[in-house]
Amino acid sequence: MTSPVLVLLSGFLCHVAIAGQTCPQPDDVPFSTVTPLKTSYDPGEQIVYFCKPGYLSQGGMRRLTCPFTGIWPLNTLKCTPRVCPFAGILDNGAVRYTTFEYPNTISFACNSGYYLNGTNSAQCTEEGKWSPELPVCAPITCPPPPVPKFATLRIYKPSARNNSLYRDRAVFKCLPHHAMFGNDTIACTAHGNWTELPECREVKCPFPSRPENGFVNYPAKQVLLYKDKATYGCHDTYNLDGPEEVECTKLGNWSAQPSCKASCKLSVKKATVLYQGERVKLQERFKNGMLHGDKVSFFCKNKEKKCSYTEEAQCVDGTIEIPKCFKEHSSLAFWKTDAWDIMPC
Image (cartoon, rainbow, N blue to C red; front, side, top):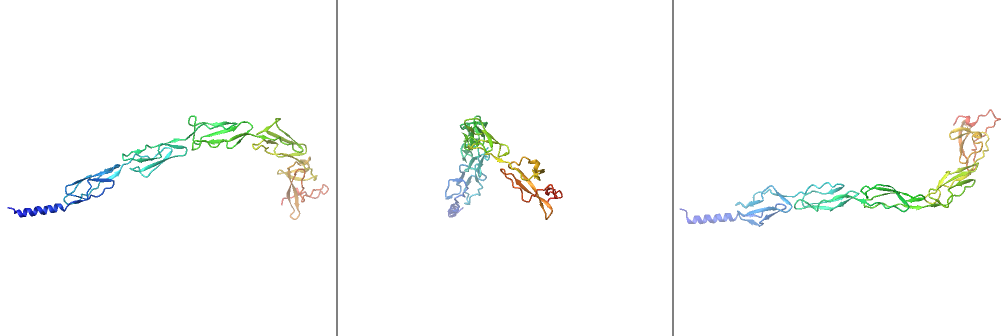
């Protein structure tokens, strides 16, 4: 028969042992909560881990019971963030992101010529959805281009029904006798408007003056306008210095002012010269004189080296300077050799 004292003593010792084996506050699992949360737990008490909104439980146990040992079991529970659908491609634009996990935010940008139809950013929600909904990049359009006064459209093909898309172009031309100031081509910009329009202005030119020793012809009109033309000519023995035809420019003046220059009378009666790369007899090729601007090269002797070289002479408004080194060969000195017939230096 067991002694009553022994029974009381063993019961007391068991109570002391059980009372001294409480469990401490459980380990923290990132992105989770514990219910109930206390600083200590008696053996047999239960706790439950709940993942916070936006996170999913993965592996390990959610429900734990405090054992008599006072040591919580090893818990491998993880709360992982929800993942939103892939949003890394935006047609005609770009998506900037780090990950698609809750609660990250992604942002959007469109290429030149497109605009964001929708939000410029979205967040992955607790439910694993994007909020607000993802945008699209819509093309930027320009209305039909305005036509400047005194101008017409030469080239214009709208790409989007009656409107134009980014970088579409329109080309203008001015009405007759109107000059264009600015670029004849405009473009649809990334802001939905057109680049700067040109301006068409009526331009007048004064009547061209008659050159001395020459004449000028132009349209028989009361006023000479942009693109009108005039033609020049010279009297006999004079040569035109400048173009034969000139045009009224957008600046209100003529494209050139030709003048008539006198021909040159030659003091040399006989010589062989270079003209336009060929040897010609001066007295035959220029029997009526040299025209203004004509150039020839005279042959000269280098007596020391017994060879020949050339020096150029040009007719300038009735005057030509014969090179001093040139010596006209006399027909009486038949035994002498002309410079042009000697080997070049």
